[in-house]
Image 1 (cartoon, one colour):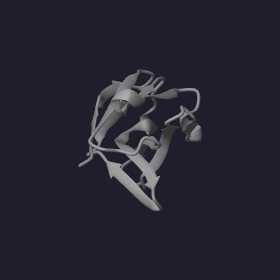
Image 2 (spheres, helix red, strand yellow):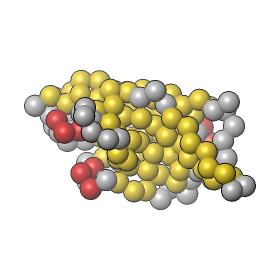
Image 3 (tube, helix red, strand yellow):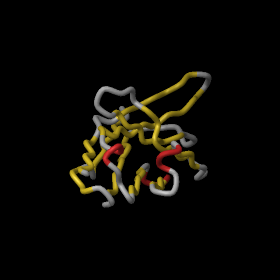
Image 4 (cartoon, one colour):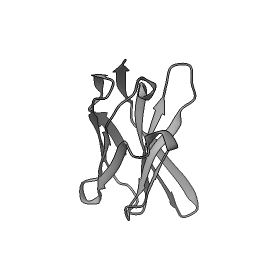
Length: 119
C-alpha cells in the first residue's frame, strides 16, 4: 500500500520562505512523476511544480524563479523550497506521485499541508 505524507506547511509573512517535504512509502514504480499541487480557497486544484525520476522539472508560471522542486529517488522523498512567498501562494499543498505501468495509470495523494502567507 502506498502512503504519501506531506509536512512543512505553516504561516509565514509575505517575502518569507517555507520548505515542504513529501515522503512516499510502499511499492511504487521506479519511473514516476512527483508533484506539488495547490488548492486555494474557492479555486480549483492546480499543479505548482513537478519533477520526474530523471530530474526534469516543470513549474506553473507564478512559481518560476521563486520555487525549487527536488527529490531523492533512493528514499522516495520530494521537497519544495518556496522563496519570496506572496499572499496568493496561500492554499493547501498536496503531494502527488503518478506513474503508468502496464497500461494502467496510478495516482496517490497525500492529505495536504496548509500554507498561509500574510500580507
